[in-house]
Amino acid sequence: MNKPMANEPTFRESVDLMYNRAVALMDLPPGLEQKIRVCNATYTVRFGVRLRGQIQTFTGYRAVHSEHMEPVKGGIRFAMAVDQDEVEALAALMTYKCALVETPFGGSKGGLCVDPRLYDEQEMEMITRRFAYELIKRDLINPSQNVPAPDMGTGEREMAWIADQYARMNTTDINAKACVTGKPLNAGGISGRVEATGRGVQYALREFFRHPEDKAAAGLDGSLEGKRVIVQGLGNVGYHAAKFLHDEDGAIITGIIERDGALFNEAGLDVDAVRDWIVKHGGVSGYPDANHSAEGGKVLEEACDILIPAALEGVINLSNADNIKAKLIIEAANGPVTAGADEILRTKGTVIIPDMYANAGGVTVSYFEWVKNLSHIRFGRMQRRQEEARHQLVVNELERLDEAMGDAWNLSPSFKQRYLRGADELELVRSGLDDTMRIAYQSMREVWHGRTDVTDLRTAAYIVAIDRVAKSYRAKGL
Image 1 (cartoon, rainbow, N blue to C red):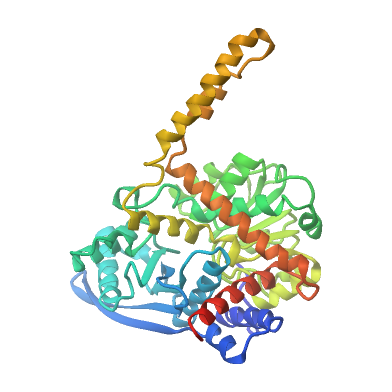
Image 2 (image 1 turned 45 degrees about the vertical axis):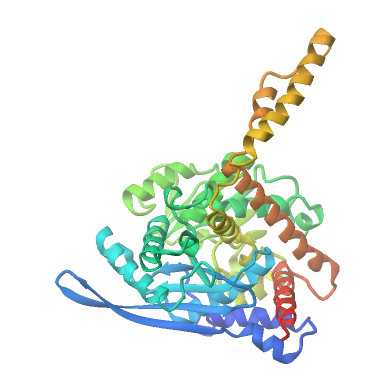
């Protein structure tokens, strides 16, 4: 993968530069502008765990960027590259992301310097529980104050351990399950959480393609069907985004980039087959039905309609931005396009759907899970059968009319079955996510097209988000 150049701003500096670009177009008092910018607090913990006969020391972080709304929300990542600057930049993005999609949270982020591949499951549980213990006892994990979620290197398993650790330390908290989201279904999770971020990417693209003016800005037309898509990173987010776009919208996945190289096939790749190969072999090398390139970064530069960076920060930077040929980039990862590359791409006319919107599916469905945990009832339980009963009345009346009119009018065979079925939790979650992504996109494009001084979606997204955060602070008397 292409490395950022030496004169490239860091991820945190990129977030600050993009923030500056937006507030320069806003009328905020300097004090409030600074208050929104800075990270409120960052906690650093160094703890020991006895593993393999000796004590190993680990370093972890939890940053709280903004408490204009509480609880604050943000994932916990397990990776060796985690540092304070990264978690603070990600916490800032969470603040803006939550404001943009109107989930009632401030922004936070956590990270632990650990390579999960070096430890077995029992060891990872010991490490995770001890990290959780250090955060819980300082209320940095709490249903009403700070609610983590999965991120790079973590998933349902780690969230279940954290939730159980919180319950052990807070035995009388009836809302203990709401201390963390992204849990397995049988531990208080919600249907659709695993697919949520990838599904959100799909819904974001669908909404973009509903607007002819926006498609024209990217030099695109028609629908998603037949559009050539390159995906960088076939982890949870990249896999689900690619699968849904191919299976449900007819897009052609021409390129998949992983850490050991990339696959490319103009006729299209079988996403499930590639995923199975990666799970079995640890990478894409040796996959039989595509051209393999050892230099994955070069496939980022192949011609395509839509490029989906879905893994690490800074993969599109000053060293390769000039060579990117995609007409539309949707940032499924956090910060995949550096500030310098963003400027080059905007000058070229490339349209970028920014990360704070594009990957907000995860926090949106996390919000639904948090609400489910606080209400202590799954979505659909109260109304599903009542919906079916009301629909039955309509079907009965249609069948009566059907009999009266004879061959002149007939119900299609599948209509009754499809219409009668009440929405289950997964359908309700997808409906809520779709609505959230649509409304948030429309708020961005109103600024994008409504102001002559705003020429891109990222600046529009920052303006919408910062304005909402500012209004929250003003309501508190700041």
